[in-house]
Image 1 (cartoon, rainbow, N blue to C red):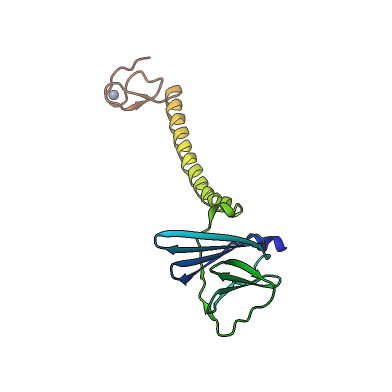
Image 2 (tube, helix red, strand yellow):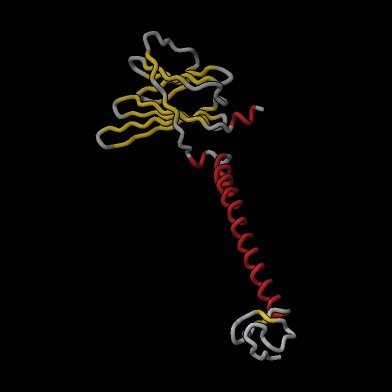
Amino acid sequence: MEFCKVWQFMMYAADLGNGQRLTIENVGTQTVLTWTSQSSGQQQSQQMSLSLGAWSSMPKLFKSHSSFILQIESQRTSYIRLQANGISLLSEVPLMLGSEEVLLQRVTTPSSPKMPEMKPLEPLRMGNMTMRMEPMEMSMGNMNLRFETETSSSANASTAHFCSQCGTKVQENDRFCAHCGTRLKS
Ligand SMILES: [Zn+2]
């Protein structure tokens, strides 16, 4: 029951300004935060994984004067503070008076290695489609092939004979062509 929820892919990103970007991802029961800051051509990133459980709703991010507060809803509500000196999980509900909510954007591009359950699904669906198409073409090809070999072999083996002179179809036992009168062999 809870397990299905676990594999729902959820990732959100927020632009924190000053070249800083935060991505929040729910991988299984882990909440993975990646905080990237870009200053003077250098990119720094810190990542933190917290075991907060599967999210029950999308996270919320608030900006206060000195830090960002991330609110994660799972079985309980967790608050994470993002400050210049690091990411920390708060043990109590922070004061968020005067803080403004930062818009989170849902990221739809799956981050590949973390979602093993998602990966086989998509190629499988694609595979089924091509698989369904290919035998159709193949079997049609086979039918045509079989058809041709059957007619040609039956023509060779049984009764189809033609006059060597005019090409009219003649019976095997005919001595002369009914059309042009040429004497037939055999
Ligand atoms: Zn003839």
